[in-house]
Image (cartoon, rainbow, N blue to C red; front, side, top):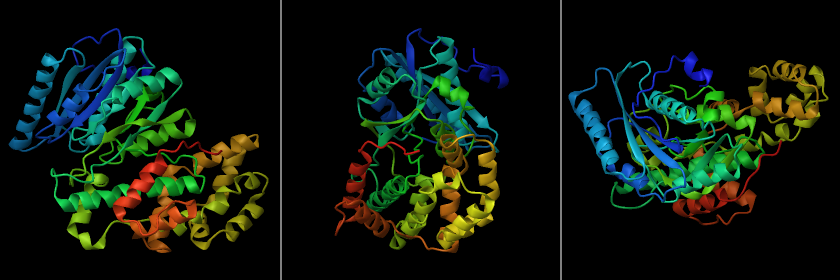
Length: 419
């Protein structure tokens, strides 16, 4: 057994021994979900891969929860057990994670509990290359979801992790019209962010959505497992893995996350929808495209920086667009770049380490800084049209929903980072 479990003093919560043929564990956190049956049915109705599948449902709530929430949790445990009794193929295992310390309680901790369990079970049957897939208690999927997961790792066994295509429902009768209108704008923001990052040749431009990601058990323990963040746990987790390579995308199936508003997390889809519903007239705002474009002269000169001394590096920073230069000065970039150089012996190594310094976390910090101090956030429709025009997409006179369709199509294209 891997020393990850020893260091954590891990104790398994599921008593049933895993099948020797176990290959995929789907981990599904559930907090205050009165009806998870739709999600469980979606997984139950998937076409079956060759090897065995388990669904691990982490039913959780924090200490001091109301009696209503406790009852919802107990009902969810019973429902998962019922699914397991009726299922002839997929195993459904509930994990009772009640009364979690409020300091840690949240989706990150719940995912960690389930993913630790999944990794342990896969290692227990000597399958470290087995797949841990993340899902949500209010999400559904295409019926080839499990097949495509198995196929990816069969074709590319060295895959560390992957993101899976997602599409929020943008019409229907399950939610009010304003919810659907808001989620169109929010998903467009996510895809605009990804495509803008790719356009400027940022190498880690992948979607990081909690309900549509997967990793091997080996990679899970290698990179330290899931974090306990109460939001953004998916971003932090995948961005530990992505810079080290062997990251892929699955576009041949699709996850359908819920578009609903929620106050359960401090940011993310649910919180963004709550903010939108508070004042729908403001629309959905996103980062000014200029804040992305300003990075192009920096990223295109990484190879040049390798040959520069501190003075020349400082002069190069001075020549960059002022918002970016200001941010780099505040970040003590000359010193940071000198440190990167001291740990590298050739250009290829420097290039990789440069982007381990200017990584996805730093990109996000930079965008927040310049959009608060130098630029102003703009309507997502406006910036998506600007970017789309630059990329040669047909975005003229498109509605928000039509723009989203264009960007969804663009995201289907194969993309490889340029180091």
